[in-house]
Image 1 (spheres, rainbow, N blue to C red):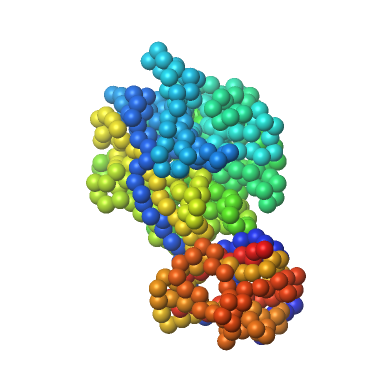
Image 2 (tube, rainbow, N blue to C red):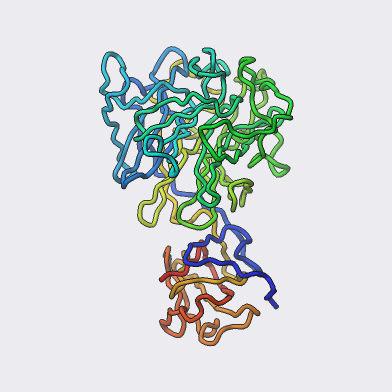
Length: 502
């Protein structure tokens, strides 16, 4: 019998995802499955002289006011494989066709008729986010790593000496995402490389910053919980400072190790030569308590002379999930987005852009893909017309499903209290699958008229399939406000989410 003493979960009218055990109390013959998106291909490439070298894997996409907005970093073709990068901007009405407006902000080759916002680094374009708590003049923010001296990081990626108060992380603010003001306070006195980022957590009314940390020489993702983004951030000052080990570039570039909590990284299930780049974390806005991270696992080749290049190896894109944004875990060790076939434009390394946009019943996600591995740029004499912004399509809520094969399976939720008049499911049973639903009381007994024997068979593929009983009865309003359990039977079907609706 189900545990009637446990406090019911209040779900109200909010959508809930079947991505972990939260809504599964008892189960038989069902499994969680990560679902990869569909690759569409490149939607933005370097068509102008200031971006005809590389369009990189650092970027952010945001929907604001009905407009899709994209920030990305790019560099011109030059004699060095990686030249000085600049932060650029594009916008779209459909997420497919992107326009690069002439902004009149930055002068390039004697003209301001371009879409450049500022000089940047290869990694400083991914940290744009909207701050709903800020005054209008500061509603857009950009997290950037700045240095106090001009150096070349790891032999490339110029860092200009524009840090007001020492190397570290600083915030830019903007009213429109185009005109940026550097704030003078150094918010973090370390210089974590890769695409550092932050977001506003509406669940706790605080900010979360996801930063590169190191465990020895292993890349990981740390998290900082912050009240004021523009004031110095908290960290453990008792941790002895360290340089970047074998990847050190300058004494003025200390990196964080254990000064902040660990959010995600390699574990015993990973090969010993794997660590994780970037995070591209999203607080999913279309369901309750869902945080998604898209790190890039980096499989290291052995150093020269066994391999051609230093610090080299392939990277693809993984998926990690969380209910609180502080600790993440993987549903699967398979890639969320896999490398392209050898010779393809994304066959060597891939990095997810931050953010996603909704397009009807689909989600658009973007990534940067290269045909060279991490250190393989050393073998490219000139980077010209490389990289690009590439699109994938994912069904709404479709990252993880709870599913059963042709032998069938079933599971039951813990006790829930809901609002609304009917229950809708995001499901895919296609042509031959079926789903049945039973509503039970808190003690686990089927409620009259809502038993499996009364359930109509649910099939096909829908993001909001209304559950019915006895040939079309959908009204569950008499049960609203009472503790109920939902039991599911499914065969050759996937369940992604449920939601009570008015």
